[in-house]
Length: 123
Image 1 (tube, rainbow, N blue to C red):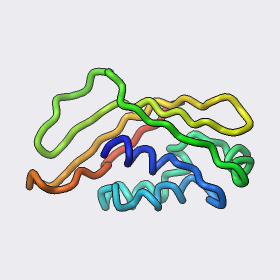
Image 2 (tube, rainbow, N blue to C red):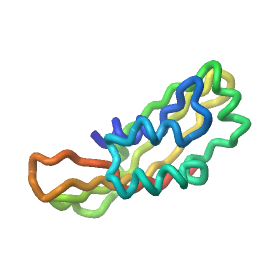
Image 3 (cartoon, rainbow, N blue to C red):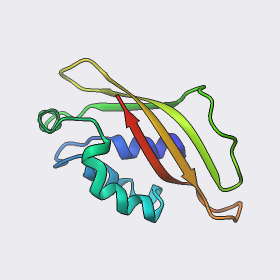
């Protein structure tokens, strides 16, 4: 679930006006609180210059996400954190490698869905 949520939040598609579009598509995978915050902060969080974003409009890059072996705090029944390696492969430039620090949460019920509750992206 974590790789799918982070991949969806960082997946650029043709016609997207800016980074907020990806986070809006990923909204079902986000906590309500994070979704509200992410919509206003996406342009700061996702380190892709506007000129690059517009260059990708006609041929969006592909995005690959994998969980790394980095240390993380112990999981609980309702919270987990992981470091992910994300590679954005543009059609016209070298790949962009990002480290993503992701937090997920769920309700106390063991059958409840995990949702992305925080995201920090560093180039």
